[in-house]
Image (cartoon, one colour):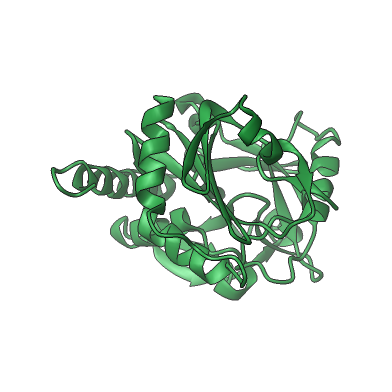
Amino acid sequence: MRYPIIDDLAGSFVIDRGRLLAVDSADAADLFRPTGRTMFYEVIRVVRGIPLFWEDHLIRLQRSVQEPATIPEGLYEDSLNLIAANGLETANLRLVLLENQAVIHLTPSNYPTSDLFSQGVATGILNWERPNPNIKLIDAGYKAAIAARYAEPGPFGGYYELLLANSDGYLTEGSRSNLFFIRGDQVLTAPDDCILKGITRKNILAAVALSGGALLTEMLTLDAVRQGYCDAAFLSSSPFDILPIRAIEDLKLSSAGNPLLHRINAAYRAIVDRYVEEKLQPGRL
């Protein structure tokens, strides 16, 4: 199945092979046309003009990329130039690598409001097991399955996110996020080899320790959640940081008021602020 290099865009400029291009220019036209080429990608949240946790994203991108695609020199400088050219200090930065080509563009951030955090989000379930979840590879079939599931109405309206259930019914991760459950002072997360190890997730694991939580490697089925095996659940992702889950299909959860979740969120926010402040110091960019 063919898919365009850019399918969601923010701003008026993109970078293709190190060249800054206006999105409506003839040179950029091919970026918006479907292609059958293999594409590897990363999505990085931009905070105050800084690509958040850049180093970790590049390490993961390096793990994902397979020959003949390569990571070019100057990717960070090109990303800063693109952010400045578009004049958007808060957005998502998307890196796409193909054979002999690197494309950088911004996507809408749709950063959730404080109301969404205080209420939580509704989620549905997609029965899907990715063959290699640690590689960020654009899979048109996976995208089509997600789109079809989102088109189905949920018990509480539209779904904000879909939770992936493996062949044994265990909930592993979100379609664009990582998944956590809280049980008392314990935070449950899926094994690393079952999920895409999110960059936000890595820093949330540090925030769990700072907030006094105990981390467990454990997965739950929806039936186990129904039976009260957890007190709360939440999602993490670069585009939205942390969001409580208020419903999984027709099951309501009281996640938004969980005290441990609020401590984790505060600790994570402090990690983000420290990273950005360090990058904004003279000579650190």
